Image (cartoon, rainbow, N blue to C red; front, side, top):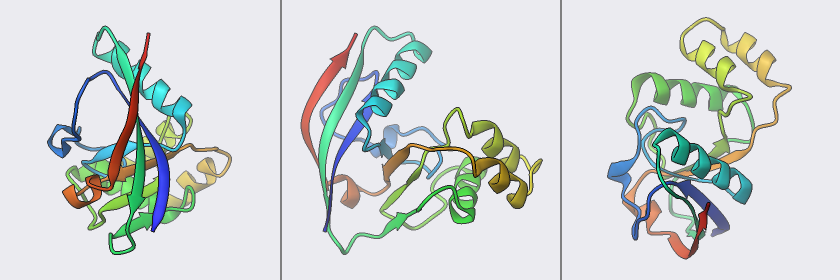
Length: 161
């Protein structure tokens, strides 16, 4: 069993995770996205607040206990496998894998241009990886099935002004 403390940043109040509210064409597909880094979740929350002209932003703190029988994909870094998963999910949409949970780097502001150019076919995989090798990416843990979401236990929620 894997255990994590995870953070989710948003501009919405909610009681339960609803996978139906996920945006499409995300790095690892439609799902509920968290991180092990509180400051990153706070940044996500602030960004959503600004983008959606919301009054408030929130960070939800979860304890995740992931049993061994769930299907988990763990990307160890900015690899070919990670890049290809991001490309498929962003280009095709939906969920382009069969995992309950995906753990890996975030395609963030530092990596976004390179990832987008790879998705568009401007960069080859070798060129994209060459450009990404100097990037330091934060992490994300995404939940893609109801069974996976059931592993999350809300510890608390806090507001960001």
